[in-house]
Image (cartoon, rainbow, N blue to C red):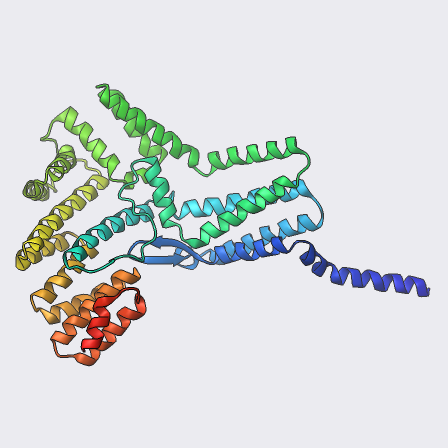
Length: 435
């Protein structure tokens, strides 16, 4: 009886200490679990100007997603403790597929995010031109993501996807890949494991829409080849099927321009559908007045019964703003502040553009429109989450406040600027010491 009691007591102690023994045996797996949850709760979307977003800001189902991730990670650890290598491999693949698909949904398959990334990349580049004219050192140095100006090519779409994704999904994906490699390496039945991985990858590509996207880009390349070979009818068929396979590609700049080029070839330059291609040619030739003239014609004929693509309208508006911004930059180069202000104001009447507003901020400073400078800075700061650009805005606001005689407010503005970006922020340091 005494021996049985002792054995039972030892069994209880063994069970109580088993989690500790698991932690001693597999500390790396526990660390991987912590990294997985850290990634899932981290920054998921990152934009060049508007900043970052977490899952809680992207979807109301964040709690369910985190619970599912934690559950899959727990099953992985349980399969490890039970010494079930094939089951562990399957669970790791499911975890990877879940994180991979979720990351695709907020980047690769999210046309709105891709369009926002393209737009902000363009605006950021235009900002650099404005800041360079004002000798602002190292402007925009806090942007570490690649700038992509179109997703017309598949490689550009991948680059945009990489830029959009924040550190959260990248950490979670890396952890999931390492867990899968670990689980695969521990399976002794190689034939079974290879078959499982192959079936999973094929199912993932087919079920999550990646296969349709690849087919759409194949048809896009075939359509371009048909156009080069003067097979216009075949090209039209190929291009018509692209957006059915991959609606997101319509958010690019290249596809609407390609469709406009087809209309130009078939119906001639007078076709309303050919206007985007004609405008792009004028913009490429630096015929900015020609771009504005065509934009005015399109506005006058907008109510006519012509079946037009919203994507084509969006591209034409973007090109018109680009033409106005370039004309404004030329005026800034000649120190013609008021003509530049007029061009930027015209562009802002078409649509909001952070680069145009930043340029107006410097124009108001140079032309001593201090109250307008302060008001515009207050409106621009909430829209910018790039630390170095925001720091430059605070510095310019400080300069305008000093010129207005509001010294205490100016010092606060300079201090804000230095807090945001203390690396070689000479303008703010000089302004703070001078005030």
